[in-house]
Image 1 (tube, one colour):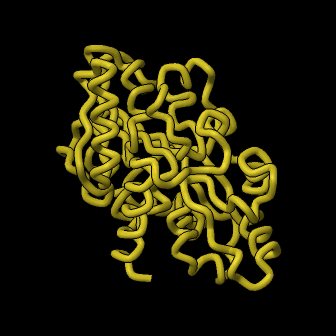
Image 2 (cartoon, rainbow, N blue to C red; image 1 turned 90 degrees about the vertical axis):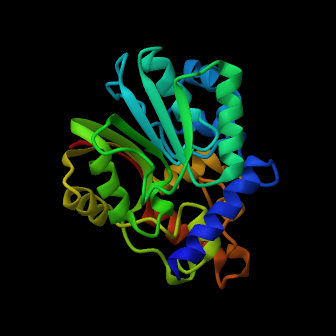
Length: 274
């Protein structure tokens, strides 16, 4: 599948989510956020910036301090950006990058409502960040890198924008084993954070090759466990965590295929530094 086909499909879907024309997971956004690790305090702080698009909490256990500059890749409506803003304080700075105009409009409106004058949302792609080199203390991202058709470029960009010793924490979907081909080639599975996922070993190798070090995976949730949390009525009805339902109904033996996919998937938190 061509990279531009994937990028266009992702942008189109998440624009629809921002406009309220498409949903994220089957469960309410707050239930999804609780299931993947957000506290009640964090949910209250984020408010309507939470669209239920995450697969983890990249801010959990991070060492954000007042005065830091934080960059959020694929910031969406600003959920994690505003949580970071609360921790870096008025002397800090948060930059969110997103490629979708509708999401940017929503995020900027959310920033204005909060009086968050030191939170900025920029249009751009995470493979070519509109951020100066060596200016960021901490990079965060939530269920976004798997959507990129060029993950090595994303991790090179993370390394480029970080200050020496700067850190990153990402929550993302990875594979523990290959997906069934019928699912791997489904465009809606790309949009839904499934088919674009890399094998965990490959994911870590890509990050290391970009010059990032001290890589640790402090959290891993198996796909079948996430299914129980996010789609208890049946994964075949809600085969996604990030905003799209995979069109498995048209596939041969859809229940078997989706079960295989669930067993292949995992949600991780990856932490490292430059």
